[in-house]
Image (cartoon, rainbow, N blue to C red; front, top):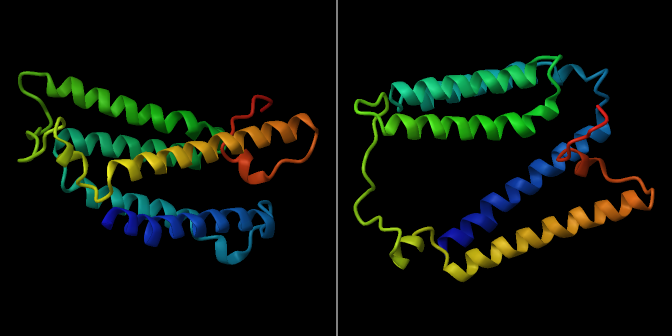
Length: 183
């Protein structure tokens, strides 16, 4: 019950508000002439990123701090450089995540690792069904959420493809998540 309550009371409404704001800002704000009150938004985003890096990095070991700093710099480079298309973040950020995980794995196999690796917490057994239910929802509810999400994704992709084949204008929101080959 707790997991479902958190999802429906906090995560889902937050996602709806953020998606609505991102779609509406594209309709009301001209990117070539942004209003004066949005001028400080990019520097504020960068400062929040570094504040989060500092707060998160204080809890990490040497390797974790280094990986956190590199990933923060990659995010700023992608979103701040006019020569790098912002659409490249679709590829670069998952690759950065994968490379960081691979580096941590390689480091964990060394005789004297840079990172600090703890054993699994007491009671954490991947084979036990009780362990998998710790998030507060039954297994069937998690499977149902996954199936509904996949159904919405497949339906959306199908409708966008049909609309494009028929020559109709597609909602700009869908294009935020697609890679264009003509750029």
